[in-house]
Length: 485
Image 1 (cartoon, one colour):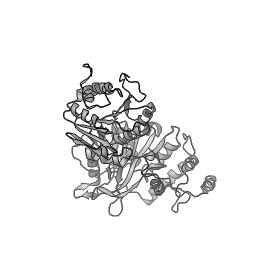
Image 2: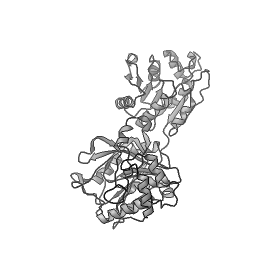
Image 3: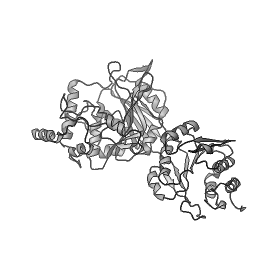
Image 4: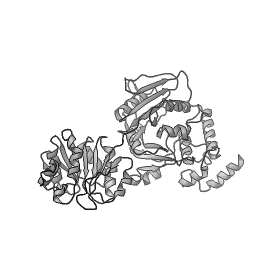
């Protein structure tokens, strides 16, 4: 063993770990020493995927004096338990196994080494599923990378290939080091009107929603609550909380434009004033975001009184209602969950981030630049009427010249409280206002009246057919309606 080798290489050689160049297989330890020596005293948790003979786990234990070392492997016969070393059976190709693993270890892992499969396909899969579960300061290293194209799958994370000297000529003697990109600021905007329903004695759903945001959001964010006229509510002294108290009602669309214009973040997350959120929802959405997207998280129904999901049912896809077949007028009816598509694409990783014709409207994520400079915010033609947020956001995105997409991100979620007799609506509308708003929205988009569009509405309909409520002869009905206008 050369005397000029690093202490880490000497420890690796002692345990016969093939990470050190002296054993002639890989040449990682000299680079690891440069990367990690300044962190020896501060690193508390290390996870290595792939246990092997346990040599690497023992090497990390000796190198990091205050760290607990964890190993994960699919083979039960490789499990071991020694001083500051604990191992778990885990199939790294299964999301549920990875989630259970992090539940046992905790998300506050400082260093992850993927030394399991050296095949190119599983390597980014494991990383993409583990990273959102881990703290934002984690260092994640994939070893034995032979196909450098896997970097194309990691684009939303910072990643680089370090120069490790190439002392050993092997096609897989390469590391990819991955970390979180520095997240931009998110402005969480909450339009509110008459949100007086108490989910708990003395606590309104709006107050509980704001509390939940401060419990769940991560990183750099602000919250802007807009009161669309009195009555107003008070909040604890949360950091970066702004309240806007308008003296009279201006309507939801104008309120949204006002709050969005005040936002200082790169991204805007709009939410209704009666919602609950997934852990780290704002950063998970941002990690998988394109600047010409409108994104909704997975949707659950909120039991406000218990502040839990009503049940396990979730809603991923929403469609645009057909105005030709609606019994109550020419309208894009609100809602529109597409349960068949939700079921069909559930638990399939390739659809974790997927196109959806529309969103529910109670929560959506968008870049501020795209909201104003492409979509132009919400039009002022119907400020007081029924919201119709999804058609304006969704259709302008799908039909516009920017190549935008409306997406669902199933890696995070929110839960929305439905209203009714027991839980009165904050934003209330007369039946005349509702009909007026429906009529304006449907005729505008079905009539192709938006001059900047790159596609007509029939392009959108054909893209997502067969959609619920749209009959096979919709083109005939559309032609007849168009001729009547």
